[in-house]
Image (tube, rainbow, N blue to C red):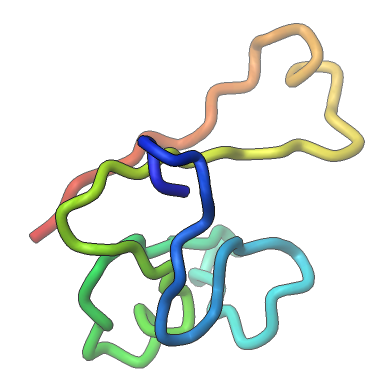
Amino acid sequence: MDVKTRFMVDNPIHRHHIGSTTQGLKANDDGSLTIYVSAKEPKDPVHRANWLPSLPGIGIQLVMRIYQPTEAALAGAYKPPAVLRVE
């Protein structure tokens, strides 16, 4: 989502979200999912499968929705994984 306009951004693979119904995602060995947000298409096929395209030069806003939350999430005790910047 473009932080200025609050609109989804057009991208070459027409992917605007990643969720439980997103086809072709590649889980990590422990069952977790690493999502790659980048303006450049990843070369690695696993990274590409889990790629959420952005646009160069714009700020983005990441939103996580939790459906059927656990008690920990409802109590505010759930801590989502950190967003890491990689080059």
